[in-house]
Figure 1 (cartoon, rainbow, N blue to C red):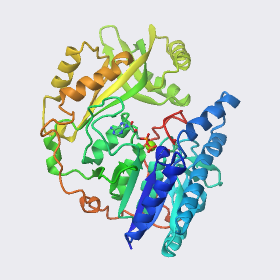
Figure 2 (figure 1 turned 180 degrees about the vertical axis):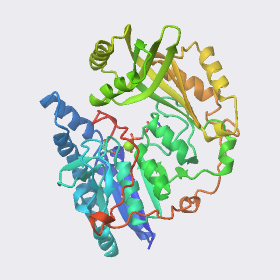
Figure 3 (figure 1 turned 90 degrees about the vertical axis):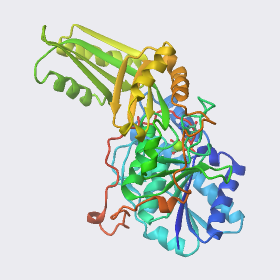
Figure 4 (figure 1 turned 90 degrees about the horizontal axis):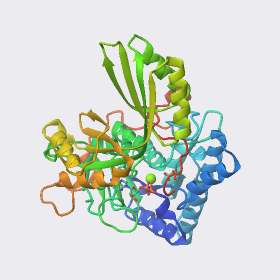
Length: 459
Ligand code: ADP
Ligand code: ASP
Ligand code: MG
C-alpha cells in the first residue's frame, strides 16, 4: 500500500478548527487507500513565543535547554491532531522524534538527521492507524532532545518520506504553492506549477522561507517527490521535481530577498600567504558564519582589501569582530555596513541564455538602486544592496523578468502534475530502517545554514 507523508505547518494547525481540517485531510488520504504519516509543526506562533520567553529568562540561553523548550511546541500539536482524528472515529497515534528513533547529531538548534527507525511506524501503519510525528525534533546518541533549525519540520517530513519509501511528501502550508517571489512582499507574484529542485534549493538558501533548505537537499538525494500546497484548498500546488529540458526555456524562475545582511571590510591587510587564512580561522573560532567573500589586491602597494558578509544585523557583535580582526592583523581600516540586504534572481535558464546580468543591472539602475557587491553561480545572480531599497528591488526585478501574473509564456507547465512520475527515484534512495548503528545512513551533508533559534514566522 502506498505511503503518503503530509506535513502541516504552524498556521495549518493554529487553532482547533484548523486541527480538525488537517485531521480530515489525513483521513481522506487514508480512505483513498493510502497509509498516512502526518508531520506536524507547533501551533501558530508557539515557537516564536517560546524563543521570546527563553530570552526573557536568560540573555544567552543554553542551546540544549532551548531545544528542550522548543520541542514542546510540536508535542502539543501532535497530541491534539491525534485527538481530532479519534473524534472523527479513526485510529491515530502521536509520536515524538525520540519515539520514532529520529537520531541526530548533537548540534543543538541546528541538528542534522542521522537515521530514522521506521519499524515501529510501519507496524502502526499496517494496523490501519494514522501516525502523527512531531516535526523539527530528534534525539542525539545520549538521548538529548535536539531541533533541526527554524522551519525544520519540512526536513522531518522529507526524511520520513525517504525512510519510509513514501510515494509523495505533501507540504501543507498557508500559501497555495511556491511563488515567483514572496507573495506577502510582491502581491503580483505568481504561483509556479513546477520548479526544479536545483532552483528550489537556491531559493530556500537565498531567503524564500517557504521550504527548509535541508529538506530540498534530502528530497534531491533520496528522490522524494515534494508537493507544496495549501492546507485550506484542494487546488494543486507546486511540484518540486527533477529538471526537464523545457525548464531552461524560462530565463528567471524566481526572485528572493534575504534581509539583514552585514558586511565587514578590512582594508590594507598585508598581501602575504596565510593572512586571509588566519582571518577566517579567527572567524571560525568565534563561530561566525560567512556568506560571501570578496578580496581585491593592490599589487603595487602589497595590500589586500578583504570584505565578507554575514547574516544578521547585530551591529555590536559585528563591531567586536571587526575590532578584534583590525587589532590582530594591523589593518589600515575596518568598516561595517549593517544595513544591507541580498536580492537574487534564480533560474536554470541562465545555463543556456545570456543577458540576465545586463537586464538585472539595467533594472536596478533604472530604479536608482546602488549595488554594493555581486555574486553569481550557474543559476543565480545575487546583489547586495542597501536594506532600505530591498523590497523595491524585489518588485523591480520581478517585473523586469516578466514574472508577474498574467504575463504570457512566463512559465509553462512541463507535465501533468503527477508527482511520483516526475521523479527518477534515487537507486539507493530510501533510508533503511535502523538495524544496527553501522547500518545508518547520513542523508544531510551540507553545512547548517539556519542561525540558532532565531525568532521566525509561524510554527
Ligand atoms: P509553514 O508554517 O506552513 O511551514 P512558512 O511560514 O514556513 O509556513 O512558509 C510559508 C510562507 O513562506 C508564506 O506565507 C510566504 O509568505 C513565505 N514565502 C517566502 N517566499 C515564498 C515563495 N517564493 N513562495 C511562497 N511562499 C513564500
Ligand atoms: N516549529 C518550528 C519553527 O517554527 C519548526 C517548523 O515550524 O517547521 O521553526
Ligand atoms: Mg515552514
